[in-house]
Length: 534
Ligand SMILES: Nc1ncnc2c1ncn2[C@@H]1O[C@H](COP(=O)(O)OP(=O)(O)O)[C@@H](O)[C@H]1O
Ligand SMILES: O=P(O)(O)OC[C@H]1O[C@](O)(COP(=O)(O)O)[C@@H](O)[C@@H]1O
Ligand SMILES: [Mg+2]
Image 1 (spheres, helix red, strand yellow):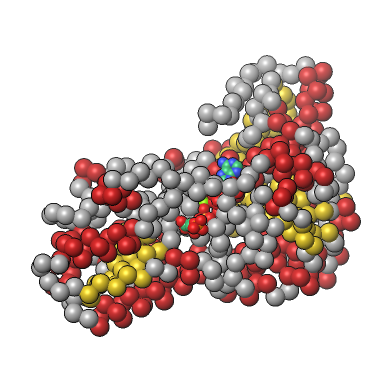
Image 2 (cartoon, rainbow, N blue to C red):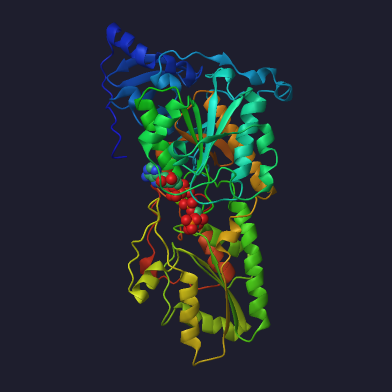
């Protein structure tokens, strides 16, 4: 919030010259607000518009730097708020528009209401009380009647950044197919090796033939990397190559990178669209329900958990310990545990735990072994890092090239601690399984493939419609365009005071490792649950 300034409304009506001035600035924006709104009057830095349906004033609030502001927020009756995304017409005077080629597309012409209504928005919060305000909404994704690119002029590029995730190739494929089949775009470039590929590598041509089979492969045909984000060099390269559509497939770090690229593009006044497609195997991106790859990773994790269970049940006092991905967010471990039903204890970064003494992990292991003769433990790689650092007396400040915390191997460490603790008490057979990279290096499953397709198509529609500086994402099951600042402002984490973690605790019957005094009220603004904390 701090970096955005809002202008207080004044009751003064604008003079006609002020109104003309504002019309020049905002005029092209008004039609896109939709037919239910019309302009009423302006005061300094703030555009008042009337919602014709409700006959009440609606405010489009903008920062002083007018259309250079980072936030576009429309408020409406009953507490309605639209957190809108930038658009070409915000900073390019009277950009030309064209009829959407989809209207002549045989597949789509039979679809009733294929084009999305300009007024369609999606609520962020769907569980409401009768007296709840309507709350925050995002612009609904999908094709618009008019587009802001002549297909022959489009030079699109696609880049994949950050760690691997199942489905990267499917998203690349579907962006290429969407641009080609739906919009007749012919020039699509692949940027190799992540952000640094913009300035350190040559591009490759992507067409329908190149991408035909790639969805069956894990990884990314473009390659990826961490670090190497040099905004000036990247935007210089975009300008030099004549690129006017940039599709960035990447996680929370990549979306931050996309946001600064977009800012630089807008600062230079370029007609270049930047769209982010969220790649988050850890599910650490906020607002969205989930993205591609998560489902596949959870499914793949079952194989490791099954193996751990088989090993554990076959030996006296067998313990199967599985380490899963999740640097800051433990969603993969939580969902893999809930899916498996063979897991006795799940440890995640969000839920602190301790080893020794009453209510600690060792006590629980002893109890479960006595009751069942075996147990399965799932641990997310980011869990218990504080304990590990304490016991190794090592600094935890090491970072990767992108600035992410470099983790120590909690799986190895905890295995050793468990063995040491029980060494003199009982015979213990502990098998440590580390499938870390196996769960993300596989191709995406059927459900993730559909997810990839819809995200890619929604991104293409948004870019063709002139929207810019957005991440496409599922919000309550609907595809939306979300402004970058909402995606990058925080990380999505498992909320251990929400029902989902309670369900897990009750399914494993493990201790919460928390004293009642440690339980704080959840800290989500407006009571919004994090994604997958249903
Ligand atoms: N705050 C940031 N500003 C600009 N670029 C960033 C920022 N954070 C990360 N990046 C860049 O985004 C890319 C991917 O980030 P990373 O954190 O490795 O993966 P992910 O996008 O999967 O979270 C890297 O090239 C990194 O340099
Ligand atoms: O690939 P690396 O650099 O070893 O990083 C491993 C990390 O990548 C992830 O798989 C995904 O992280 P990102 O979304 O930041 O790419 C994490 O779960 C894991 O901690
Ligand atoms: Mg990340």
